[in-house]
Each structure stands twice: as C-alpha cells, then as structure tokens.
Amino acid sequence: MKLMQLCVGMVRTNCYIVYDEATREAAVIDPGDNAKSILHAVNEEQLNVKYVLLTHAHFDHILAAHEVLEATGAQYVVPEKDIWLLSRDNMGQFRGLARNYVQDTPDILANEGTEVTFGGMTATYMATPGHTPGSSVIRIGDCLFTGDTLFRHECGRCDLEGGDFSAMLRSLKRLHDLDGDYKVFPGHEGISTLNEERAYNPYMLQAMGK
Image (tube, rainbow, N blue to C red):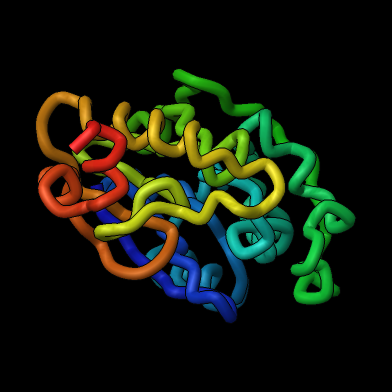
C-alpha cells in the first residue's frame, strides 16, 4: 500500500490518496477542497481511482468530492447516518464557505462493517459516532483513517449539530480496545499511532475511566 497526504482547504483538512503500486488502483479519502491539487496528484501517479471514501460528511471533508468523482468516475461511499450533511442547506454557519459546492448522490451507503476492495486492499468502515452521527474510522491494513473522531492527543469537537460527547467517548474506547497497534491518519493535523493515543490522549484516557 502506498499513501499520499494532502492538506487542503481553509481549515487544513487531511485528504489521503491510498493506492496499490502494482495495479495503480486507488481510493481518495475525504476530498475536502482543492480538487485541482488532488487530481494533479492522481494524474501524476497515473492512478485509477475506484472510490471516494468519506469518514464523515462535514463541509471541510466534501467540497472537492464532486470534481474528483466527475473526473475519475469513482464510486462515492458515504456513511449512511451522515447523508443529511451532504446538503448545503445543512451546513449551518459554514454554508457561506460552500458557494460552489455540488451535491452528489452516494453510490454506497456505509455502515458498520461495510467493505470496499481496490488494488487487493480492503477498506472497512467502523462506526465511531460522536463528532457526527455517521462518523467512521476506515481501516485499511495496519492504518486507521480516523477523520474527526481521533486526532493526535485530541478528539473531534462534539458541539455541532449531531455531535454527542458520550458517543465520542464510547467510540474512543472502542478504538482503544482494538487488538494491536495501528498507524493513525486523522482528518486534521499530524499522524500518530494507536499506542501513542492509548498512552497520551486525555480523551481516550477519560473514555477508559483513567
């Protein structure tokens, strides 16, 4: 598995391009903005994007989705419980930042255990509500793409519509209890490991009653 990380948009969202070096099949995770940059990276590596995968559907994770889908013919995978957030009308205070946003209909509605395969890799959805009702972690091999559920030494905010801090703590406990270590690729800021978060993330420690 090969991985590219692009920091896109005004709130510096991490967009990930995951691909198989042999087949060139790829998935784009959270195309938050700057479609031109995302597509440039795709074209430079001559990738065949099979899927656009969302960890959740807040505006800063979807603004480039339409252009990427249109240019690549990829299938759009969206957590089912976040469909309502795809509408510009439901972006609330952020609606003004999405003037050129075009809403697309998902091809696949993701729930707990939903899997898609590309380039010999399987991306598996884990339901981790808290930041939004549909917030999910996407597991590919030994990597967790955690969206706005788990950050390095932090977690996502729960004060926006659909947020639930109690649900967030349950989701963080679930991640803590996974077997083994994983690389953690969050929706914002720097990467981490699950072992580091088990040791130092105050919200994960709170979730474990420590």
